Image (cartoon, rainbow, N blue to C red; front, side, top):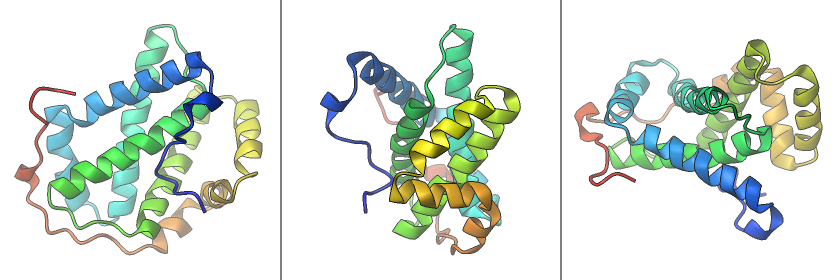
Length: 186
């Protein structure tokens, strides 16, 4: 089964325009993740939550929605496949930042649960806000259903609370002051 937290390594499978959009999406997302304000707020938000899996998912969705909104303001629409693949990469980066700050590493099952929950939350909000049409969601879900990992995501979209309830939270032995943006920027 492919790891849901990695992006395909074969860049020859996508057009240069798609790859360029993906690179911009990821770079801008990393700038948000490593922004001092964002970085300083992640651990306290997770520590304060009774559902850390959901809290991490919501952090990712907040970042993605900000990226999509900024693109719309610039007159661009980010295709759903870039949002999904780019978000995967950004989630892996969020895990690295949280673990570097002292959060107990999550199990693969927990990480998959975060991804599934984030996907569910994002798609719901994207349709409600008009960023994605019902037709685009249907096309995307048909594409997603063709993969094993996609079938798990679709189960979560249909019943997100069950996905969260079936996971154990990570250990919270974290110093909220330990998280800081890297020196020199990205």
